[in-house]
Length: 386
Image (cartoon, rainbow, N blue to C red; front, side, top):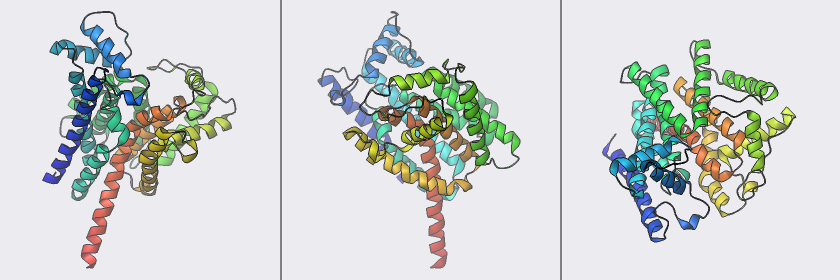
């Protein structure tokens, strides 16, 4: 990348570091131990992770919810400290890995003449992606590492099964297994989503000699989901240990919680009603909240800063979908599976803003690739016509 691109990377890195540092000192001065800001209200999962990590580091009984507690506790033990800032810096490293991995995936799909423009645009979007910025700097949440290992898994899978990387395939495969183990340790259903998407891709790749057809992907997903809903909704899935019915009941319990809830019920014996509401839930998690779903300042800000932007990006990608390469089809497939899964369980806009980051980073990568190539092609046409 040129010097301008390097400066954008520095800008991204500084913004995330400075925001996390400012929040830390403001939180300390407010008596919140550097973990979060009191102005946001509600509970702070970071407080729980910190307390359990401290217990793990001191050899005391602790509550295990994810590998994040072991990792944070190991860092505190290694550096013999109880400093929250050390843990914040550890999470900050994940932001750098996310940017680097996103650029590596982009390099796999974009042509050389458009790489600089697309990389610059990607850095700018990730720099000012509100939910990514807030969820990786407000506290020591595990979410940032879920995004990291998901993206790393995408990149390594591409190197092993779709497009050869610089390193030997065996080395990439070993790294992929490690990334998947860490992904499962941080969030089991993220691992489940990745495995489902990968298996469907590999199956279709064996069936298709050249390019994977998206209508085949849609057909398999529709038939598979219909059969599962009708016949196997009470069967507990491996990895997550939950059945379809368990997830629907969990969603139903939180349905009337108020606040930023979507208020969409999926627990219907009629499969037609289920699909109608499921589509509504999918779109709400994907690009919501819609204007009629705005219930306050938080949902209004979310709609303006993300929902509207994502809507126009979606329209652009739909128009370009016939030009997607196999790598882009794989990324899109992973995104669809992810949103299909979270749309079953999640009925809250605040939660969706965190969860959909996994799905939107790959879509942003695809978007900047096509947008930049379009701009480069238009410049060339103008150059030759003048």
